[in-house]
Length: 215
Picture 1 (cartoon, rainbow, N blue to C red):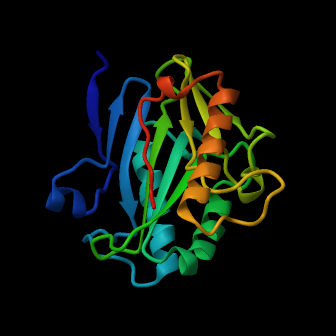
Picture 2 (picture 1 turned 120 degrees about the vertical axis):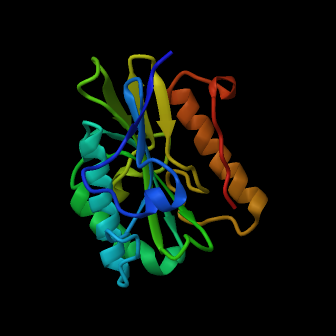
Picture 3 (picture 1 turned 90 degrees about the vertical axis):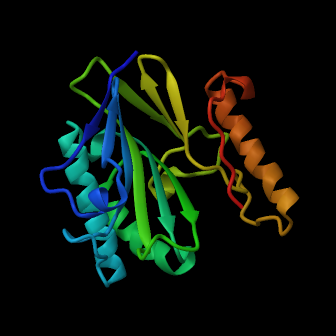
């Protein structure tokens, strides 16, 4: 069984001790990074939203470095926002600076009501390049809607072991710009997109080990 090790950056902020958790855990060839926020060394948030996003990415990079990784090693990326519609422009601008060209990591964006005094959080899973012959391939199948134009990928596959990570799927499909007004219609399109991803992987729903839905 792979050993599980806690990973701390050189100068961790006060939140980890205050709430009793690790910045990241290293298990086998993967690094699981806790949600990073725009916290200053004393644990308080940056007052400006863009500054929060930039500080969160800086904290993320420091944690990745402590685990032997960089932004290029990210397999799966999840962001949390307290006001997605107003904040997403600033988030994408910073994200595009950090990931300027393909292949892009997976990205799932989730709107939430609160983040313990913060307005943005980012958590990732990364592969550890020095640990083994681990590699990551990224895919944007033509049968799925165009995520690449937005700067992220539908699918990331980690080898060895062929473990696949999928971005969050929404009510979108190639050649269709309108979104169904009803939840059932949206769910049908999102499920069809998930099915297209599984087909690309030559997999089925029986092969899924984790599934989360947000509404």
